[in-house]
Image (cartoon, rainbow, N blue to C red; front, top):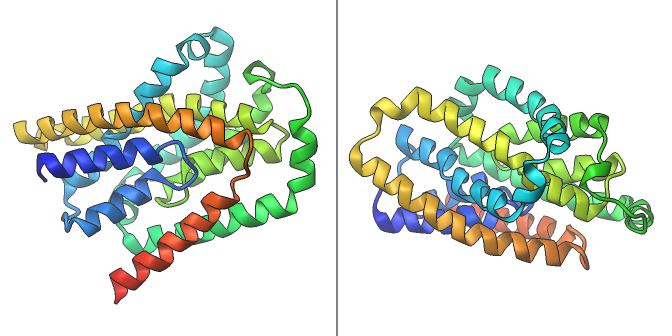
Length: 260
């Protein structure tokens, strides 16, 4: 890895972390395009770099995330992913992270699901959008269900953002509200995932590795702030169908390049 690689991956992470298109998938695919070998450090980089984007949420939503009621609801939503992630850590790191075929399938099926979801539930969603709602109105039951959906994102390419947003909307949470809750839920989820990976692998990191990580974290923090503001403005006037079509188009283009 070089500083250029770290910068590019930082930009990719920041722009894609909170959109329903899977930041992990994009990091893996872009790494393939740059011919980066999926060694242990590069796999760890793709996990740890997400903290930069997560810190942008703390920066933008500090008034909400440190409320005791919200902390309790985020904890309830975090538990399912924490348990599943801890149990499957070795399998995820060894067989899923860096697996291009798995990523492409997850991207394609996830994109198709987003398109169908908007078509099938369009009327229900439109009705739900007319109701007043906010982060405080998400119940503990809804929080737990959202957490179960988030656990699907242990498969790279599924998209943590897409899973939590769809799960929340299916259980009656307003579009803008679940998007913001998804932002907040990313904080404990990704900090825990990063902490676990650093604990298990930091002994193997070199001084250069730490420098690459620091650069990637800073770049992803800055770009994520821009991505969050764009996404909030976008979803108030548009559905997620465009993201579904984007995922499918990305798979087609990349598959032609990768397998051709």
